[in-house]
Image (cartoon, rainbow, N blue to C red; front, side, top):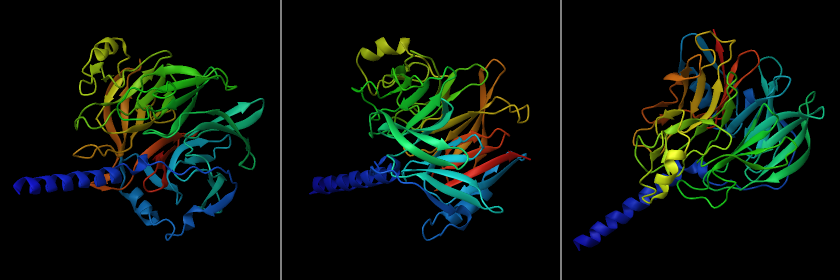
Length: 406
């Protein structure tokens, strides 16, 4: 009889654990794919109906509680649209954002007075994420990385309209990490980040767990860097020209292991996942064979190790228009944590680099998205405008923030 009670208790504990896991992992649930692309709808984000988006009031108060250095000002630039992720700026400095879980691309521009106008440029996309503007034969193009393909649109700069959608290539779809990201290189080639389909496994599809590269005419797709679990975002260092990328490492190990990473991505380099992490440390929990011993010594070590489960997303180099103390340092968005007994992340950090680009230290830059287990936001993307204004997307409370120096 006693064994029966113990068995029943174990079943209940396991079921509760599964429920908690599903709640915590809701961002990994696949969104339905829509086949049609629709254009165009406009709304005033300052008069958003709270019955449609019950997060609006929380968003307004959220910005008031964010904490940063006293010589910076934080305000809400726009809000009221679901799950803003990647931000880019068109040639007229208008913000364009992807709504990955709402399957849309939107433009945000100034309306009458202080009002911000959000216009849907395209809808019915397949979890759009990465965005890239490129001038092709005198025509402005917007490239969109959907979960299963790369799509291009003609972009009307004067009227902020998209037209003539065209699929350029197919990509491995869905899985554990379904978002794709784009980066234009200085030699006109284009990088495509494709995360793994799993937490820890040996992938069979060589177009996953990699950063791919293509010519700007979308020919000659090949691997640029490999053995990467999920390098969600990439950025070019304006000083060295090196490609920096954030890397989210595995779950279900320890609270403080393995570290998430910032890597300097070298063409032809491989970075160890799933066999080794950080400074070539073997993940013996995953692999107890000789494979790790053969692999890890030849892998590229991390450039910067980050607190485990911080989920680093966008990284941005601070421009010289900011105070000299900050110029060319690195800002990184720590998105969230779920696989940790004490939550971490939910903030923007500043990483100090010396004149030679060596890492020195990390400090908090914007915090207070989390307090006593209350989550008030999750930063995603960071984008500097040409005048030095910093924009930041938040996909929990559906807002874009504006950060300026006082």
